[in-house]
Image (cartoon, rainbow, N blue to C red; front, side, top):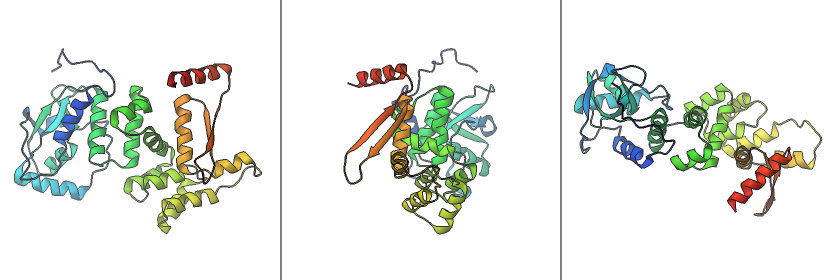
Length: 303
């Protein structure tokens, strides 16, 4: 049943404090006798509750679900799920937060669940899902990156807006999104926990990320060792020149910062940091006078 007074989407971060309050109250997925049950808006048959198709979290630990199901069999569902009326099918409710409890309740053979019904837009549902999982550190780096990319591609948000709304630095968001350029098998290693996000960042510039990833896993290499190995395996395509030397000598964080700045101003940015000092040179390349004018405008606004 549609609500004619349903508010329009007012952009990422709209009412973020209210979203955070719901997530904070919904946060516990563990069952505890000390938990104070929150009064639900209603009880809904479990077959009328459906997961959010845009849920950034794709992997659920089966043993943890089994433990939660045992707790639910004994005490019931203490914290109601946050849901919204499904925009796809009348009479159904889409999960905004609490998919673990929904999955565990199916294992526990519950017939209905307590829910809190909220009016969220598609953007807000995705935002809440990301906030909820990040607060619990439940998302792996690839899932978190995919969530950020969804917000950017589907809803047109910039890295700057994501940074402000979600409390993450722009470089953190940019570094994670770059991981989605890795081959699917390397991404799978990150999802399974065989590689960290730091390892994955070091592999982005490798000639053969898949082969190098297997060496890293087999050898139990650290992130720094992986970075050195990635540099060593590069085959120079031109004689050593000052530009080539500087590029290959940069660490992953410097390259990530260059990519972040380039994406922000849509021009090529080069950072040449002098080893052993806090000095360096930042250069911006433009292809036309229009781009130069745009850069001057950006610098003027920041003054």
